[in-house]
Image (cartoon, rainbow, N blue to C red; front, side):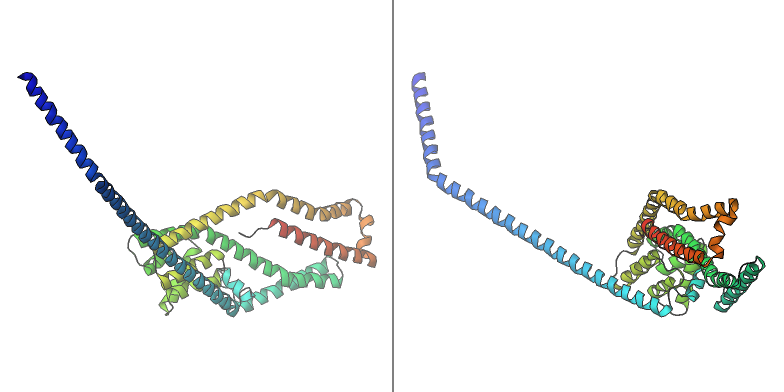
Length: 337
């Protein structure tokens, strides 16, 4: 009885397996077809998704290209406007240079002081026993060259102080704007609590706004008294932000970082070129040192250069060649960043 039950169970199992095999054989093609259809459908969906992503990426690239082109066009237009303003304002003239020194010295007073200094040098050279022609040349050089050199020295010193403090002022503006203050209040904050000469320049910007100028125009006028590339960068950033919009605090923060990097690069270049500058100074001063030592030890040996006409020609030719050499060395060791 037990053996008969086992036979029946085995037959049932075999029948079930055979039925399953027959069903699988009949349904296999359909199942594979459905799998293939699902796979094709998934590939089509993935392709559509990739196409949409690619299209979105292309749209973003085109938008960025358009925005970049717009910014470049704005930069070119602003540079042209700035060049035109510089020409109108007489950039480089003695009147503009006097305004850049930070002192209230009028043009008439400057010419008066130059004339007085030239007259004093003329009298001094005559008292020293130099010929009249040499005294006139010394007076002319003193009246024309020395005052302008002093003005240039004062301008460079003030610009150096400005560049040391300007990035700190931009950082204060960035934090003020991030805290919710408008740009006008940030400018007034620098004008009230900043360090000189940044404080004076921003005070002029605030005063220009009070007489009706817009913020970009008022900042652009800063180039009249502080003609630096860094100030031009700041003016361009404010002008672009006023025209195209954007995150002003981020733009000013990036500008502050760029200015600090420029300062570091200038210091690095100055350190690397210091040896060449020292060599140029020694080479340029060597003829004058040798001539002075020869005059002190053997005055009759070198005095012929100052008494004989041929010596005058030699001194003139030597001065010309020395000037050319100094000019060439200066251009070799000076780098614009």
